[in-house]
Image (cartoon, rainbow, N blue to C red; front, side, top):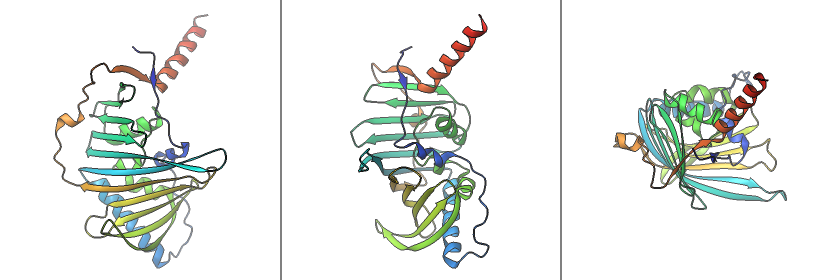
Length: 270
């Protein structure tokens, strides 16, 4: 096996906040205002609608800040196409602003991640649901999956655990779609705004996350387009066929774990 290892770094570490289950925060206001009640309903409808969708596809255009030592913020971007087929199939195609392309596939048994620039891929066994695969990829493999919480069937519970306050901002129109604009705060020093389409399909159209506890308060944003709740999905989409000359490598965490095991075994044999 190639001695290289695959490790996809986060734009900034606190993106992991989106995947950490948290205890519900104590109620901040025993008598929520009309604005707070309306915001709570918008978030609840959005999260439940997305969590209950058996399959969907969507395109995103992401942007994220990289704070320099000088304090200046430089924005980088990425385009992604996400295909979800519950309970156990997921495909994410990505292209960064520097042209680097990537692919993540989960087929119910294995997680495979491919990086085109280096023509390398890594595969690890992870049988189970999308929920289990996503959490394993983020928590154990340290794979970067922005807004991964939105892929989970437990999205409503996860969101409820994170949010300590929410307010309705206004009705706004994004890409000719009337949306409810909500601003919320979490119990991890992270604020977010979300624009949710009004009507019978309360899907997110835009998300902006501000990391208040990070130096320079960087932001992550995502614009959602081409939502399809009944996409024509074939099994072939979730089969990874390595391109010619592609090398199979290990995830960095696998290499690290193997090294720790080897050191431990060596010590026990003394």
